[in-house]
Length: 250
Image 1 (cartoon, rainbow, N blue to C red):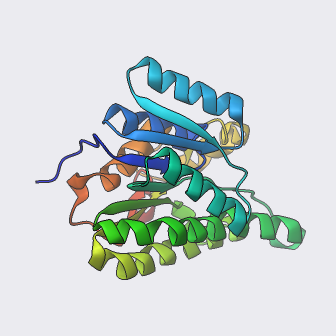
Image 2: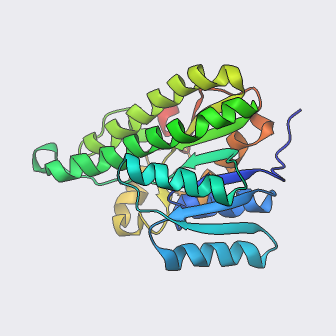
C-alpha cells in the first residue's frame, strides 16, 4: 500500500496564498513536504509560510503573477532552484472564476480566464513534468470545478476553461504516466473561502442542490488533493475526482 507521507518531497502550489491553495499547502507541509507557496500577494503568502513554519513545517514563498508562458517558466525555474533541483509535486490551484452572462463578458475577461486557468497549467506542466518523468516519479494535481461537468447559466466561461483542464489532465496522464508521473484532478463543489465570500447566499443555494446540502471547507478539498499527490493514490492516473458533496452524482 502507498503512503500518505510526503517527507522529502518538494511541492509547488499555485494560488496558494489563500483558500483551497493555502489549505493544501498547509496539509502537504504537515505530511512532510517542502512546500513552495506561489501567489501574487506577498503579505498573504508570508502569512501562510509563517504559519507552516511555526508548526515545524518547511515552506517558502515565491512571488508569481501568472498570466503567460514567460511568467509560468520563471516560476518553474525559481521553484526548481529553491527545491534543490527538483519539483516532485505540482498543484495547479490558481484560477479565476468570474460569473455572468455570455453577451456581457468582456474579451479581456475571456483572455484572462483562459490565460490563468488553461495556459498557465499547460506551461507549468511543460516545464516541470519532463524532469519528473526523467526521475521516474512525480504527481500533478489540477484543481477543476464541478461546473466543468454540466451547464450552468452564467458559468460558460469559467466552466469551459476547467473542462479544458480536465481534458489536459487525461492527456497528460497518457503522456507522462508511462514514465511514473501521475496526473489527476479534483472537481470541488461550492467551497467557503475568501474568494467566494462575496457570493453570500448564492453559495449556500448552489450547495443546497447537492446531497451534502452545504458548502465544503477548504480543508475538505485539500484532503482530496493531498491524497492524489501522495503514494496512497499510486494506482490512480487520469482521474477527475468530484469533491462536490455529491452534486454531479444526482
